[in-house]
Amino acid sequence: MIRIAAVGDVHLGEDMRGRLRPALEKVGEHADVLLLAGDLTRHGTVAEAQVVADEFADLPVPVVAVLGNHDHQDDKPLEVTKTLQDKGIHVLEGTTFEARINGCTLGVAGVKGFGGGFAGKCGSAFGEREMKAFIQHTCDIAETLEQALSELDTDIKVALTHYAPVPDTLRGEPPEIYPFLGSYLLGEAIDATGTHLAIHGHAHFGTEQGMTPGGVRVRNVAQPIIRSAYTVYVMEGANA
Image 1 (spheres, rainbow, N blue to C red):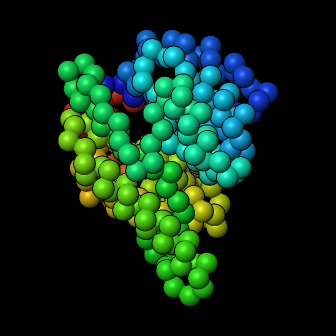
Image 2 (cartoon, rainbow, N blue to C red):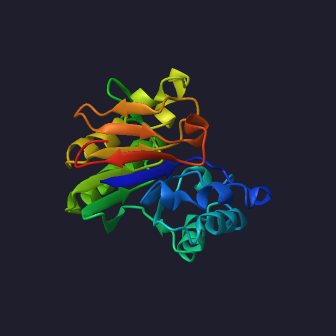
């Protein structure tokens, strides 16, 4: 059994130092690992990233993160990543994290993800150069996620993204913005790789629970959805 704590979209600014820390100090009593599903900062500045790093550093469980669109706003994703990694936070982008917990192996593959839409209502790499570049970026990220998940040989396999892999967890958001909240290509990568759980954020007005077409559980852990410092999912084999 592995207890996975998760939260996204905490949007920490320099004025929020110490805001989450009291609730995080005892995370080890409730979980074995903490996943952060992007949008950790407001505007992606290094100063904000330092607040995030201090907030989530030196916890009693490993902390694994992906960046979100807000974390790219200041065009310093590499600097933001380094700031978090310097405090021991594992930041994934096409990479993986593995751990043995309670006699069980856990593997997490992470990417930010991107938009594009969902089956029957999605963009295509056709027409203007800008449109082709938009969709190609999603295709590239989905392929990277699939490759990373395929490389994991663990008892429990988790996909960690910021953007949504299914429309289920977007219900409550205006349908007009679904193409900017996620892509079905992420869901296809998850279904193709024997993944047990998919964690994402980004959809502040969506819903928590969904499922891929292949039956993989999807959870939207944006903080406005879970309304707490984190939520916990218990994994026993392939069950959450």
